[in-house]
Image (cartoon, rainbow over all chains, first blue to last red; front, side, top):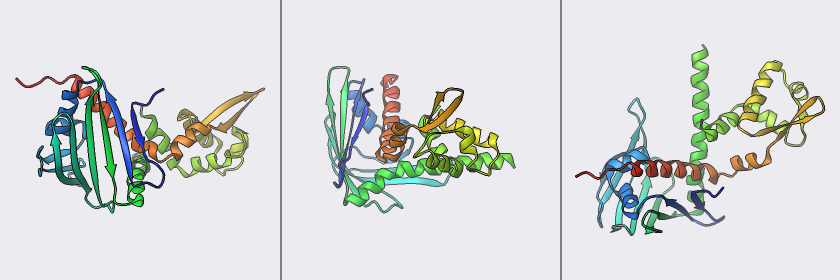
Length: 155
Length: 107
């Protein structure tokens, strides 16, 4: 089966490319990336700030049900070309991954299909690999937390 | 059911990791696997069931016996550390697609 979302991260390089085709017109895809209430829905994070323009800033924050902040990221937008391209910096708070440069290109395949191509550039190979491993570690943590939850219920 | 999470849940348990290690070089029956542990036999059976359900182990019938062996393809998927990252984005993008398919522009 062809994978819909592709990640290309070559060994020893400090960048990666995420590609995905959508059954959506280009305008709708771009809207999903640039309207705060839509970003909040699919990214599962709160959008504190999103200024879709050159020199604009953006700020995301995610809290757990108890109100503890578990994810915080921000950056500055360097290019904002509607339905074409967004270039921005990305920095996650509290992790040693440095600042990333992200260039996202949007294109129409047909009237009803579109594609996004996200090129993410890291400061070093080590930082890129740490970032790649993050969901894996979270998965393990999730499993441990889940296990604890189950064990606590058994007590 | 989320298969990816099941796999992580499976490998997060020390006994199940030990079972996977044991089967890395051989295929064994449930009894032979249980003989390697102090844990009660039904507990080992439960572990084998979980590992089989998330496709890390495969069962093979030979005569009256069932042998367990490692599913190399699935193990590789877990070992490949890019895969969870890819799935994270895949989940997000699937959500995006679903949301935008129902999107009605505000008049």
